[in-house]
Length: 286
Length: 189
Image (cartoon, rainbow over all chains, first blue to last red; front, side):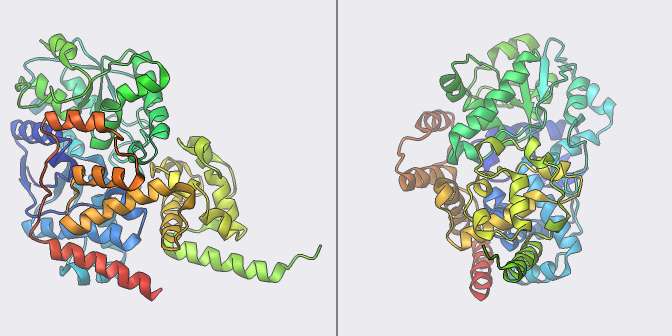
């Protein structure tokens, strides 16, 4: 299995641990990731909130680069995945937009690659391939899998899991020995970039997600989006200050938890780079 | 009171056509069940909740919608889209409304949010990728809130998660061409 790898901007900066753990775990699972050379930003929310053409053309440049590699795309970041997959659909179906975009990016792209989130790629790996590599099962760990918005919505773009009750991440972490929790906020929004531009709104949403996870008995959260991770982890202290709470819930990328179960060193998975102390969870795994 | 019905009808039809063209969605299909508002995580902060945005559009009340804070507070989570029993992509409608409000300079109700998008896109235009440190500094300078998230920045920095140098890509000109095209298209409208 070989994919054109699209890390996106956050994975080269504030979400370095998502990049590192995605690469090392993929290698162990026999998934080859070849980074798209000279990739550019997908435009994220700011592009689609500003101009429709921009929101298609920015991702399309990267899709055209992947097509030249002759590979399908794997993107760990939920937001990048969503933008790439959404733009791909438009490039496939909207003739007029396709012509305009190709004209500007100097390509002949027709939507021929498939865009997958890395979670979806992992879900296509045979169960035994994962279970045979689990040397430190996550037996003592109760995990609240948090999917957020962009992995599962809108279903016309994503479609690999249920938009209200997704299970892909739960199933993979169960193979790693963890107990994944039934809880109601798997797909509630964390506020995304409102964390920067209207923080009080995001803090309320983050507070509610943490409250639900803790009440369900979670030792930690697992997620697949750098913006979700930073809102839930880095802003957790801001939530505590605003609401008088005492949350100390570690928030991992799902790739880090799989890696820990596979016995990959915590340094390679960069599990010490989070804001909320992760050592308790690491001790539980042993 | 005399109410000018004919003129209003025309205005209303025009708006429906414009929104349909920009978003690919047929607003007339909405039957006001309110499911979008019920699931919206930010509806409580909005001046006009999502189902009322749809109704105001149906009535042709353009200014009420384009000047609302609701279209900027929308976090693009697409819960409304996923749940709409009429299969309207409401998040796409919000995008189209924001784009138009932004073009017409109607950002008074949510200046910092519009500013954030501007700075984010400027970073892409300049570097091809987003340079998070530059983005944060720029945003804080322009909002006058110099120390917003300084506590987070410090931790990110000490853990080597913030680069000090802006990224550079070879295809920078291709990315800039995309932005130029956007300007041309908007000028031609």
